[in-house]
Length: 463
Ligand code: PLP
Image (spheres, rainbow, N blue to C red):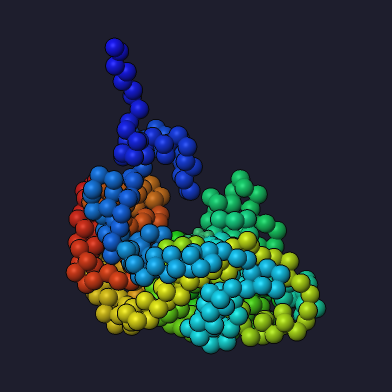
């Protein structure tokens, strides 16, 4: 009898998942050739609880990024699984097209009108941040058409902005590699510099730099013509662009400029929303009164896809009173199971007072521990608001000088973090973090201590 041995690894083992991943799975933002050639293959995450991930080899990893900036209430929340289960048994899906609705999206809409900044009181749902920002692009144009100003169709946003991966969202975004070679940005999408003092501020005073960065928006509006500009969109803090926290002078100026030229102000709160900064929405902290606000991620803590665009009373009234169909929508707009999970998620955020805790306890603790890292020889700046933060890696602190290699130092540090089982992200030569809002002060200490070790190793590598 011949015994046949196969080279194929046993099913549902690390080796099997890695092989299937290489062969059949196209992951986002991946160099497929590099992944194919890499020895290690993907890390397979199989379980999670609180702020800790466990991989298929049983290794515990501290998730300093809350997944992709989204698992606000932490992993393993039974209430969210139960909300989905209950809703799926009752009514797993029905659409909200053609004059129908289901209870969860309606109940959630009422709740969102209560907790979002004053003046925002109607919501249009999608399933991702990208979809909401695409909705903004169409809704803003539709609004101005209804107002009798169809030529107001241009958009202004910032370099380093991330608003998503769909064609309009990537056009609104300011990530050059996402645009070059992809026929983007689409016509009518314009960009100005971000309020990124550390890299662009030079010797300017921070607040003066903030005013000058805002002035770029005014100059761009005047260049295009105020009667042609539909909206300015910005993340209150640019997340994927490197956790760029603007000077205090920036947003009030942007608000004034948008009002003066009758340009809609859109806040992308996809990362900042639902408590991340110690406010339910960062617009409250920065004094932004948006005409539209996009949200996703923390709305369900990433347990199930959902997003929304909140619109102001003025936009809502115009849509309702002017008439004319808004030819736009997604099969999953107002998905009842996703909305039921969002309601349960917001209930946890409120019941556990997560926003207050981030503002008064864990946020200040992270800031204090990061401030100690500012003394590290290769750290040029630390910054944070609530539980979103960053540090800049430099060769020389004064004048601010980067290591050669354009992002190499960040990648080295990120790889050390990966090897030390703490997930942090590198953006150019900066390290960014956004842990679940349920992280304890002891876990913050652990995160910062691992990061310090990785900075030491990075400094050694860069010699
Ligand atoms: N807007 C911001 C600020 C984001 O950070 C992201 C994703 O990271 C998006 C929009 C896009 O969201 P999604 O990936 O859900 O399409």
